[in-house]
Length: 347
Image (cartoon, rainbow, N blue to C red; front, side, top):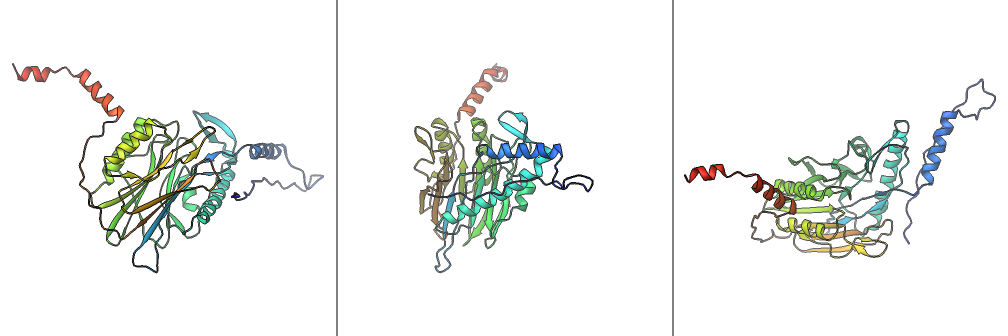
């Protein structure tokens, strides 16, 4: 059995004035805050995705090997729910700093726990749904890891993606020409070069309440922006879709020469298992496995590959992606066409 890390509880302190009879007296406002914090700490923890992507190089061998790992973890969150917007909740200003600091501490603890579950120390972690603000990500302290590329929500609570990289590896952020859409399609991109080969890593997340068609169209634009026949692409997807949605994502990836590496279920439900997470790439000689770390309702995934492999000999063919949204848009355009120009041309 795997035991999750303990958490540091948030507390409020009040210093009594000299005029008070008791030095331990606490005013009504502080008592109220302490009561709310205690009630929230007693509630069930919220679920947060932490998908991790990793690369491990063997120093004793001329050939470099990479390990890619993904996982989903559970993190508790202390906050006052003061404003509800759809399924997202805003944080009360008086506890915003406390909740933010606690989230960072829990994130750091979970990150370190996950890293110890892998047989090899990974170099790159891709994290989805980190729930941190932009400034919080930059101040997160992880053992020998730096935040290279990340996205955070500004309108809704939760969500976000980030890529943390071992400080020994030279990796840079890459910005696509397509903006993130909160809940529908959130992503970040990093790129690096090893052995004269170019690698692009994408971490992408879709909320369960997000629009699937908008997710597919945005993903298509991102892939179209970074795609090149001489580049290796690795896409870590947490799309939270079932059946037809999985097929649409797989079909879109295949149009860019990306194959699915995860073959088993990644989440165990009350009655059956489903595959809500996957990893796609055009990297040859890969070995994928599922990690049962028992700290969440989602399993992790591990992908190993050799970095000095020969470039894939693949004949690429660019084709249109016939998603349901694209087909419907095509029908709408046809129905609104008057054909006046065509009729005039043949008179």
